[in-house]
Length: 130
Image (cartoon, rainbow, N blue to C red; front, side, top):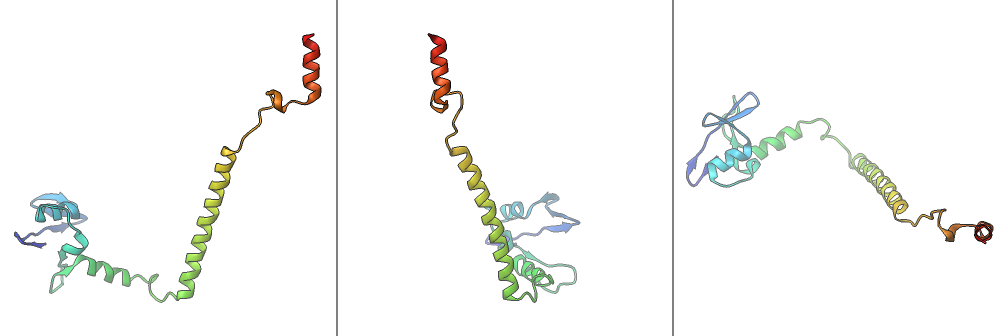
């Protein structure tokens, strides 16, 4: 990573990024190099074994994504169908949540209270009190 203070280097060892002998995340590396959090995809350059030049991480990321067979050769119609299907599932879920919330919000009558009792029950109870 190049900054006004100079160039900073880290090395990938297996699945770990090592900077000054310490395992770091991409964010931690940018903080160590620039003194503040930076966008590692945009500010970190990478040179892989066999590469002849340094490449910005986001460019490599884009290239790796382009190699994914699922992302290539998908017609707009198929993509729209998948989006519509996902939206339909999301709407069905939202409708279910709304119906559930309405069920909790609706007033429930408790049959033990007088307003919900039948007239015969009320009259019977009054006659028992006499």
